[in-house]
Every structure is written in C-alpha cells, then in structure tokens.
Image (tube, rainbow, N blue to C red; front, side, top):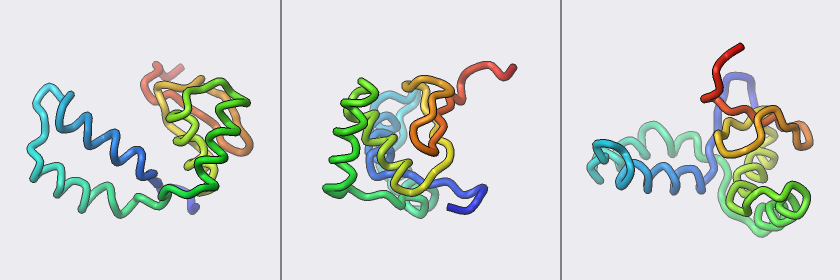
Length: 109
C-alpha cells in the first residue's frame, strides 16, 4: 500500500452504515448513506471476506484476547499490508506484526 493511501474492510463499511443510520445525533437518510458509500467509502474498500481472513482473526483472538470482531479489523489491516490501524477500541501503541495500532482520539502529546 502506497504512503498516504487508506483502505477499508467490508466490516468497517457495515459498522459505519449502521452507526450512520441509527446512532448519529442526526441520522443519515438512507439515500445520503448510499451516496456516501458509493462516492467516498466503497472506492477504498479493498478487503473482502475470505476463509483466510476469518482464520487469521481466530488466531489473533487467541493471541491477543481482543474481541473477534476487533480481530477481523486487525486481520484486514494485516491482509492489505497496512502499517497503521486507527481504532479507539484497541490498545494504543500495540504492534502486531508490522501493524501499529493508534487511537486517533487520544490527546496529542
């Protein structure tokens, strides 16, 4: 993956869609979500489900004790050779393989 590029997994699209429709202070209209997915997010969706991805997530779950769905995100990041995974749910600064996890909501020091 080239520097400056960002990618998403299918799982991130699903989670975003659910939050956008149901949990935003002002929920997105379905038509607006559809447009946002097509124009902004889908072009970056490069990780789709596969047996290997699910197996990697299971292995990561056993190694890290992270929740399985979090491990799917880590497995997806590893599958596309990402150097950085932004997550508020995982341990900030943790390195798994060549992947570093950062919480983008922590104050900058």
